[in-house]
Amino acid sequence: MNDSRLSRRALIAGAGTAALAAPALAKLGGMIDLGLPGGPGLRPLSPAFPGKGEMIVQRIRPPLLETPMEAFAKGIITPNDRMFVRWNWPFPTEVKAAEHRVAIGGAVKQAVSLSLDEIAGAGEHVEIVAINQCAGNGRGLSEPRVTGTQWGNGAMGCAKWTGVRLRDVLAKAGLAEGAKRVRYAGLDVTLTEGAPQFIKSLPMDMAMRDDVLVAWAMNGEPLPILHGFPLRIVVPGWFSTYWVKMLAAIEVLTGEDDSHYVAETYRWPSVPVTPQAKDFPTVPITAMPPRAFITSHADGAVVAKGEPLTLEGFAFGGDAALERVDLVGTGRGGGWEIPCDLGPDEGGQYAFRRWSVRLPQVAGDFEGIGVRAKNVKGAVQPESLVWNRSGYARNVIERITLRAQ
Ligand SMILES: Nc1nc2c(c(=O)[nH]1)N[C@H]1C(S)=C(S)[C@@H](COP(=O)(O)O)O[C@H]1N2
Ligand SMILES: [Mo]
Image 1: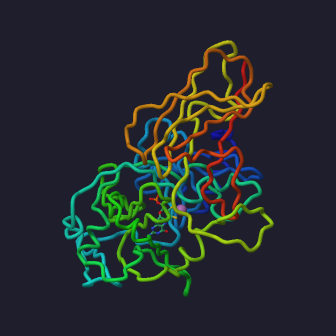
Image 2: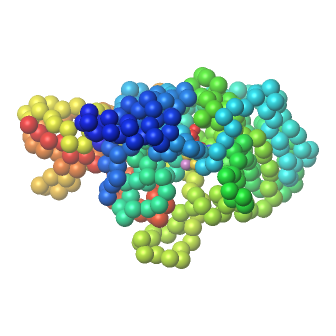
Image 3: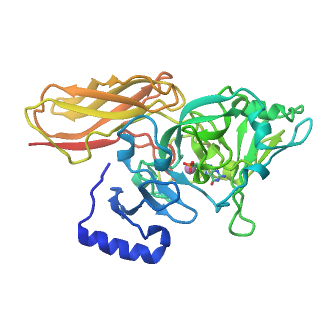
């Protein structure tokens, strides 16, 4: 949560370099330090992407935009103009709603091609508040380092999604005997010949769930292009690698999915591994574990000695409701923990939830304090990083130090 802006000189130098790199950065607002261990942590901040406020630029094309942590301090909903953006491949910058179709084929009774109106008419309209989090969120903080986009913790956000149930859309085609998985693709196109298309699939029990949606709205607005206009899959509680954007095709499978992004990547070890480990079994990354963050104070912030101190932030349970949040730290007497107060449950079990805690008096520095979330399934954030070579599913307790003066 390191938000140190550079000096004006560095800022101008940064703007100059970036202006050469791409027109999108011409209106460069400044730089941000993500505090990645081993660096480099500096990234440009830019308000220049279509429909976006100030975002951390991880890559321009296809865009990888990270949300500055300050956007999470205000409330449980991440506004559309602050939601992080991630695309594996280039995608159309314009999609004509009237012409868009979703083709459903494979193990179905009757292959169909559905217009947006037909999708909207497929069933009851459902609204759900859910966290969209990249499986690689926080990967840049891994030690030892791992390859992949060096995200800080801003590859997540919480929005209200509106759509119909995937199962109601599937019912338009009807499942054939032996249907086992539901695979789907968007409109993005691969850059290099023979490269794998970004397609993902869900096991049938997930695809049939009450809250798995084909969504067309995000926070009450049509999906922005960067977030998958006109339709995207929403799988509350699961990492957003499954939330395919610009949904255009659905295929029902009778067997396992051997496609690249299911069979080869977005997997992690099913046993604990060391950085040296070579052959180990893997399973797909699916459900999100709980996480919690402090938003009231950045690492290194100064607090008033002898005064009371209120800390605030947000947390989430992952694939189950949040049960509790504790402030945890170390002191001369060993570890300590203080329960935090949970804010109102505004968004339900898949949403961010605010927490706060008031300490009666600051006695001295707080070295490495953090907040630890636990969900109702009993999953709790670990003390140390569960390292894996792709940096997936980070949920170690995030710690900061506060200086008393
Ligand atoms: N069509 C398509 N959908 C996609 C992707 C993609 O590359 N193409 N990336 C996925 C990944 S890895 C993430 S983290 C989320 C990001 O969603 P957002 O850009 O709306 O935040 O989209 C998912 N859906
Ligand atoms: Mo992702």
